Image (cartoon, rainbow, N blue to C red; front, side):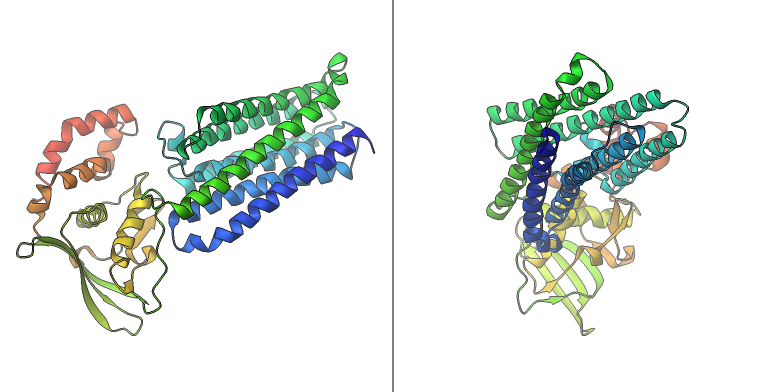
Length: 426
């Protein structure tokens, strides 16, 4: 057995075993996707990572049974397989449950859009490889440089991006400074291999003598990288199962006597002055087409009820809401009702989704907000309208003031919110 065959068998063993473990982890939590949108997104991101790691396994198998010289055709096939790995790693970025918000993570707010854009970019990359193969006779060596260089740039960019996300993912789980430094070192060394390995094959001379050592360095780095992924998801799932944190809400098991609401007929939100309590009243039909009216009452104006007020007012204003926290808002609204009622709501029944823009499905005339001036006097109501204020600004106004820029949006909020809020009951 040659050193390279030993390396490839080691690569296959490491990646396939970790991918198998992560698949079992994903499978054991897959049913929870129906209970919580947080689990659904986490499971989806993990599935992309499983495919990414399996791509390395496929590369190892391909090279084990096809140990050819460094020809252009071999390079193209190798880079296409490498691009598939980068594709799945890039796709997974949007599904890490991190809270940090900055210019980089804003790309992942609209997950569907991110997935589409990544597929488009990598379709263009693979098309480039294919076209290069067709014209390879005219510039063979230059083709090698272009293909290997482009793939290296994408690989380093991909590793840097996922390293950045992993850093904050571990940090938000409570890991200490030494572990975070370890993550940075692993990602840095792993990125370095994406330069050293191509150079050792492309540049003849002394550097090529170090190729076996670079392969050993690469397999050490990849082992550490997949270990970090496996550890993160193990701790994350354990944390989700044992922590009643509102940022990762999990629906309680359905009562055996519970029924599902089939059709929602009316929503009413108000304040009972006699009882001094807030209430949410729903009129609906069950699976037997029997009509019911139930009321959820609470002495405190809780966050989920604030979301009900926000969505109800937006419906009356013909406004669709989009925000990085809408997914959590929708879950809390439904869970707020389901915790107290034997008749269960679903997000699909309550909300309409148009490319990440959400509104209540019910006709605006069937949504009743009583005592809007009373609610408007509450500081918590004002705060939530301030948070979602940009959604109520007309599109023409957004374009005119370039409110996609955070600085412009903050200034517009400061200048216009008080006037807007004082008029919302009119």
